[in-house]
Image (cartoon, rainbow, N blue to C red; front, side, top):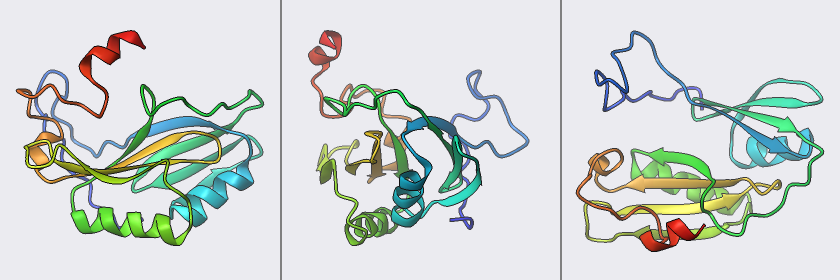
Length: 170
């Protein structure tokens, strides 16, 4: 996973994303119950590389981005839905998305939501699947048929599977 190509931010130079002189990586901290199950799922299962660790934390490299698993004694409850909270990856090559989908099957990680196509035959068309780690953190893996839909396509209001009216009801 260390030979990954970093993609330029499509909005570089805007007020929200000024011109940068270095690579920017995404960082996400998330709760886990223990380090050994975290390593089994993320390193052995998903293929992350592990970095520093101690009894309370594990740093993971997920396709060039930093995940930090923090051990908590708080109860970790399964979510009722993929909304509002999940994190994930967007692959820019369909073959890479398929490779990870196949790896998930080979490693028997199980799908929270199995692979499917959303918004077929539109600019928003993409492949997606969801995973749930042993601590109920949801992970979405996507591939967009039309890369401009990742940050663009403002003329469309479709986002995810939830009807727009459902968003206001929680």
